[in-house]
Structure formats: structure tokens, C-alpha cells
Length: 130
Length: 361
Image 1: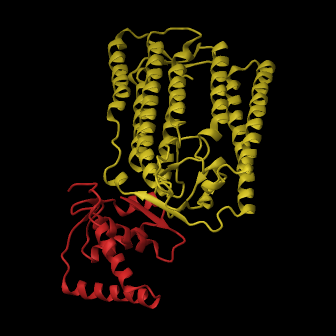
Image 2 (image 1 turned 90 degrees about the vertical axis):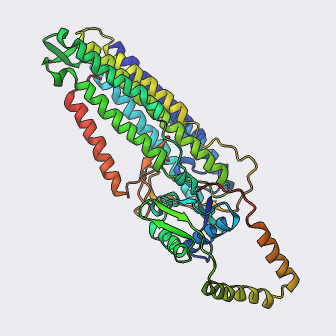
Image 3 (image 1 turned 180 degrees about the horizontal axis):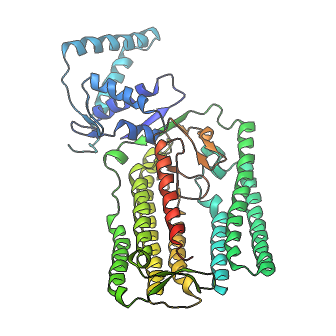
């Protein structure tokens, strides 16, 4: 999977990496069992400090999306949503939807956007088989 | 005498051709070792410096050759001829640095990076499913090394009691050693050292070199990197085989006590051929067409601050050991990486071994 880092973005690099890996999983490009590079190797490809990649992987691990293997990298896992995740995700969705409302986006547009984003996931063929 | 002239002329010609080709084979967005945004790759300042650089290299090359001729005419010392090659490389880097400096000034004055979104890209598949090391290409070098040892073992009884271990520039032996396993097989040890070292470098390039993907066209760029590292490793392994072949030929000259003024040629010709092929192959740098991949809107980040004079890469935050070179072609080590010290120590040890063994050349 291709990962891009935008240095001009307000979003920290580790967050950008984490978000793109989540999207790749949602897309189906990464599936359960797909390997991810070791933190040092990925950091070397970007020419960034490996602690940055570590931080991204740590977030993904806490969220149950990857399993870390010492030294060899990480593997994508799937964890079903639990009530705690639902509550936390709903809170974030609430903030995001509130932003749309306060900026005057019509509710129909917001719903249509949600629908098309949801439909866009799981359409890409997986790049690695477990 | 003639051999030394032929060899230094051939080497000088190779360096000169490489120097003149450099602007065409270096990455488009790194002209003379300065990172520039794609929209400034064909900037008038770059075009102007390229013209000036080529003229300087050509004049410098002629001057270096003239110096070589004058030195030879005055001293008649053929051992000084390779110096012209070093002189030429020095002139080449000087011309490169002047162009580097001017383009850097134009880039700063024109604020080429202002308002651009800088970024980096990586392809995780290059790590999780890395390009394969071309093991098959290592076999010629191994076969030649084993063959040298076997031929040496067979010939050992018939070898003369004293072996020529060093040749003067005329191809006439000027240093001798009593026959012993150490003296007879000295070049086999060099073969093993060279094969191990260059094999390790080839493996390092395939598995560990920085992909340096263009964030504007990451997919095509990653595809190109995958094929280029495989090509680079094969070129290096081919070079190893040719070096080992030269050492085999040199061993045969030593073991059969052959005296010929062309003795240095049997060592250097295969190596020179290997170098020429490797250079031609590696010169196919940055040639991957974009194939209509949509531009992501990102520009490769300006990483000039990690380069010293466009020559040395020093970045402590970077865990990469091998990064694409800016002066010349191929890869260079990240001097900010502690492992670079280990690598350089290995090179130093090998050169020390070669000097200690006084192998001909």
C-alpha cells in the first residue's frame, strides 16, 4: 500500500500514517493477516525518525487493528467493534457531523457523502493474502 | 609502457563520458544534487548551468589529459598515469559543485518551494514483499572463485619455487616470494573478500536501500524502484564476476611464471569491462514514464539540508543506510547512520588486505 505524508498538513505525521493504514484496511487493500513493514524499515523509507512510525503503529495496536511482532513488523488483525468503541466512534462522528451543520452543509448532502464514502470502501482488490 | 597508457586513457575516457552524461542520467528533480520541484526541473537556470557544466568538464578533461601527457613526457614514469584519472574525477566534482552552488542560489532567490505542499511517500510492499535478491547472478562469481582455488590446487606441485607477487608497470615481476599456500592463493583470498563485500552491498541495495519515491506519482515511482534495485544488484554481481575473472587470470600468470608486458591487461580488462557494463546499466536512472498516473499534488520534500556539497548524506534521524547518490550514479551510505562506520571499516580492511598482498595492478 502506498503511504503519503504531507509535511504541510496540520495533522501530525503519525496520525496521517495511522489514518491511511485504517483506510487501506477499510478499502480491502490490507486484509486480515496482511503484513506491515517493521517500524525502522518504514521510517527509513520516509527518512523520518522511527519513533514517529512507532507512534502510528501503537495507535493501531491499541485500537486492535494490528498485532505487533517484535522486530519483524506488524500484521493486520480484525477486532469486532465493542460497546466502548461504538461510544467513542459515535462521539467523534458527532463532532464531524456538527462541523458540517455549523458550516451550513445540507443534511441530504452530508448523508449522500457518508453513503458514497461507505460505498467506496471494500472495492479495491487485496494486495496481500494471509 | 603501452599497457599503462592504454589503461589510463580508457579509464579517463570512461570518467569523462560519465561526467558529460551526468546531467541526462541524474534524476530530473535533483539537478546537480539540488532538490527542485518538478515544475522547476527545466528552469532556465538549470539549463544554463548544464551547458556551462558540460563545457567546463570538456575543457577540464582536455587539461587533465594534457597534464598527464606533460608529466609522462617529463618523468617517463608510467605509474603516474593513473593520477590523471584522479585529477579528472577532481575536475568533474569541481564542475559539479559549481553548478550545484549556482542552482542552489537560483532556488533560494526564486523561492522555488514557496507555496508547495511538500511530502514523502513509501510503498509498504517494497518491505513486506521486497524485490528478490538475484542469487543466480552470484553463481558466476562463486564458480570462478572455486575454479581458481581448484586450478591452484592442481597446479601447486608444478609451480616454480619462487612466485612473482608484484609486477611493475612494464608487466615485469619486481617482487618475489617463496612458494607457499599463502603466496600462491593470495588472490583467491582477495576474490573471497571482494565477492563477500560486493555481494553484501548488492544485498543491502536490494533489501535496504531507500526507495525515495516521488510523492507526486508514487505508484509508478515504486514500480520503477523495484526494477532498478534488481538491475543494480545484477550489475554489481556481474562486476564481481569480472573482478574474480581478472584475479583468476592474474593467478594463472603468477602460477605459470609467464612474463609478458601485457600481464596487467589480463587483470584490468575484465574489471574495466565489468565497470563499463555496470555504469551503462545503472545510467538508466529515472527513466520510468508516469503512464498517466494522477498527480497527488505533493512535491518531494526539500531534503538539501542533509547533503554536504551534494556529495555526503548525513542524517541521524534517518535509519536508511543506502540512499540514492547525488553525484555520480548508484547509491551512497548515510554517514549519519552508525552502521556506515562498520561498512567503511570493511572497505578499509579490504583495501588494506589488497595493499598488504601487493596484488598487481
